[in-house]
Length: 39
Image (cartoon, rainbow, N blue to C red; front, side, top):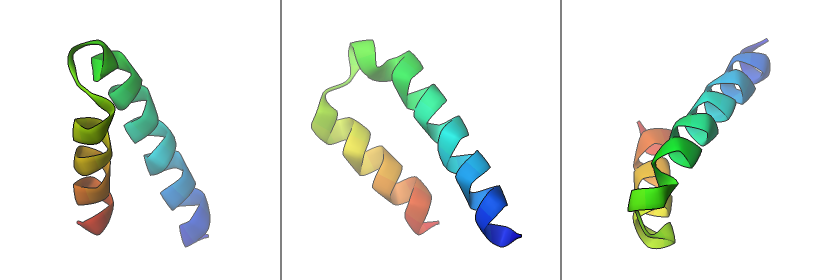
């Protein structure tokens, strides 16, 4: 069951990242995503 939640959270993160990709570089996006996943 936890896997389903993790997938949903990752999808939300991807959506948020896509919204802000225009102003950020891929490296910054990867850093923010990795930090979010580490939390």
